[in-house]
Length: 158
Image (tube, rainbow, N blue to C red; front, side, top):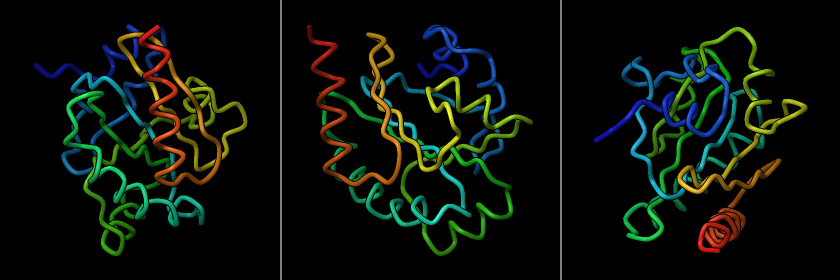
């Protein structure tokens, strides 16, 4: 049964700023499947490295989304306007969900995920059930994502 991501974030000790996340397509609060590993990628259309990494992230996700263990989910968290996101996704579609931050203080929101300076792109690989996570600042590729997933998953197995 799906739970609201807000509940999962509160369980992980994060502030309720997650209430400002909506699914970009449906305009509804984001839902979370409570996968073993969550990959949260913070991005914006004005960020050149963000735009560059998205096709690679999409290819990576296509390879890992059906694996049984660890079960991985990926979400792009856009710090941008609805129109900018719509226009960008027309030319660069992705198969993973895009969530949109609708709050007033994106820097404070990103700080709750360890992004102290508000740099984009910024990716957090986390295992919500065991409370482990690893952050990646800057552009990612499949190799970096695999390494981070393996590192976080290994910490959960200790």
